[in-house]
Length: 261
Image (cartoon, rainbow, N blue to C red):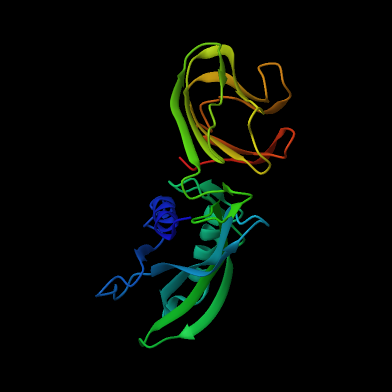
């Protein structure tokens, strides 16, 4: 879990904001706010972090993404309402990953009327959206002598796929990250997650970068095992990710989504 990585991921997402709608500043900026133009200021406010499972393998952080909206008083409240609608379109139920592999999820934007603030001639509204970030726990306890995390993380890739193939996960730790770059047309590639030597609650995360229209299947245990997840590239959603958890017998799909691009 990384507070800084979450902050960076949100800053990257907000970089797509159309400044023609309102100038958007971060945190305690600016020193000299605009004097006539509508402007906004965002901040990330974590409120609690706790273990998300019984074995303390995963951590969950909850908090608020907070926007202060300042509009000229003469324009009334509709400008702020329109901006809140645009924030809703950008953030409502958004799911994506930060660079540490943490899963970020937003709830729905809500708008609060504050009124005339300290500066004469301005109205303030606050747009607030609750977020949740789930990630591998730092300094997780050991159970039965098995350290559940800390150094218990392995990585694989980037695996470059350009033709039909069968690739096994090489997971060696409780948590495993796989990166895949896949391109080309008209073929199916398979990534399979072996069950041998895996422990209950093991976690595998697969991040993919698609180009063109290949198909990728992720299967349980072997190249002929149950299909857990599949996707055919369409040049629209290029960066899917999926996470899988081992239940002591087999792998199952835990979550999947697309990174914003």
